Length: 170
Image (cartoon, rainbow, N blue to C red; front, side, top):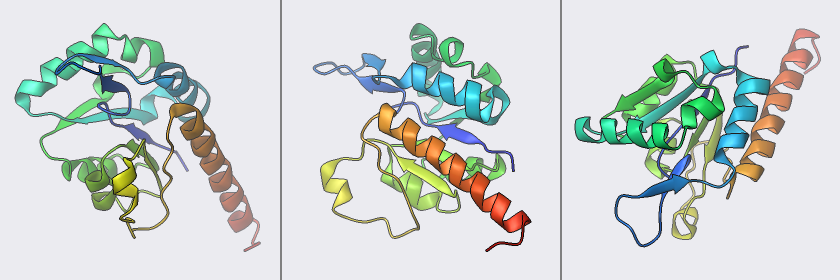
């Protein structure tokens, strides 16, 4: 099985600078964590960034990613940066890419992408957690260090599951 990782931008890789409207900064540990996942677990050709940005926001998102050297530092190819107009469209893109791992901070995206086996609801807000998703297992990492451990553990579980299935041990 070829694992495919899909990442959101706002709230996952970049976050708003407190006290500003449009200024963004890197989410702590995002670059080094994603670079490790790309290099050691998924590969650049199977790692994608999918951002919900209208036509006007696409250029701004690309500029922010360039400004913070996100593609360069993580090894994700520019061709693997995809955009959609609505959050629900992320589920369609995830299905088209055969996504196995999704990291997004939107409840709506996780509800729509329930077919993705390993979903990581990144830094969910306290009030959002009071309303469970009820769409299968989902991880809720509060930061990239914990997300990294959960993602790597899920890859190991998938590998063990495949081994047990191939050897006839259920």
